Length: 201
Image (cartoon, rainbow, N blue to C red; front, top):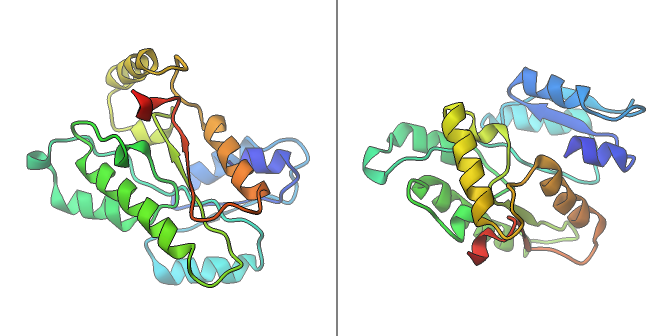
């Protein structure tokens, strides 16, 4: 997302609790993105979050994609502490598991449904801030890193065969949805689904 925004002329601030993720994002920014900066930030620490926003000052858009690796397991086998950590990370990017859950996605589906409801409720608070949420389907990102590589690639391949578009998503597909919402002035409380047609199947 930072890469896409920088191509549009934005001065991006990239933050993550994983310094390697910040550095990797900054390396991918286009030539001439000199105003970009990276910061460490644990979004589960309220004091850190307040300090982060005090430090960056005014900004035009916020894209929030923090999340943990997806827990895929049956409810009976779910580690409650791990599920709580997953739910403790506030996310304004959701996922299609809330609309079309699959076996093993109980925790993720619950969070995704909650995020869409939260977005609609927050959009009714005093404006003029607009608030929207993007809902990706299967996208080739690090959120799947806990699956063994063979399982991960098998999942991507079988998902691609099931989708009308014939492939899984890439990060740039989702970035396009964010750019649309950032540029539009009349969308608020909306969920933009970017899933290759998964919820239709």
